[in-house]
Length: 355
Image (spheres, rainbow, N blue to C red):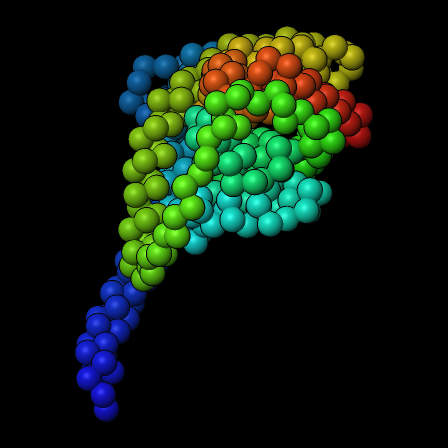
């Protein structure tokens, strides 16, 4: 036996023990999570109607029960989804993503970019550095836009919360239509050949060709990475989650069903564009807007109109356009808004028609 084998033996044994311990603690944590999750409905009713002097069936009681039920429910779902996908994300570094996309043909690149947007650790606030990195790495403009549309809109938080709150059918519809918009919009923008509408300082930026040695991660490292993702993401979005649930609670308790059905119902032809116009000025993320979506659907709003509202909030928010203005000229921003808006309107009308 050589000295290298003798040296690595104890290290490997220690890593295996750490993995077993991590798996045991993880399994125990999931079981505890499930037990607590199952008690949320009864707990919210007890807090609302037994602990507080509120009458059952009242508007205020309905709103408070919704808030007390959805707040821990959404936060627990968010914790589980972010931790699990954080482990998956440890396999996808930004460098790997850029290298992978830069070697693909245009349409294939649009497809792969949209799919990578689901599991890579980026949101709309990362638009500027990502755009610069992708362009200087030789990623085609249309492929870059497919990624930037998919990453904030069709991400694991949106899909996980939609599945947990509204079921797998709504989550699957959102996944399919979101990917369609990201792929189609990126392909159209790529066909228009608008590279000269990127700000000059971006096109002149050069990426230093530095070969970075990839760090090998153990499974314990990946669990730590997942926990760090929980602290980072939940620490960043919790306020939007609480505000979104508060808005949803208000809609759930005080807004009559007929109002939302008339404004965002499938019978009015203008419900989809109005839903988009309502969504654009709002600034939120998937975790914050989904409780509002849940309340809107519960009050009779049509699925297509609600999907259009949600997509416009996430993909076409005014703050994101302000950030993108640093690297894009107004004409390209206008094309981006127009193409994505057409995709969102198509999705809204389609699902209002068939569902």
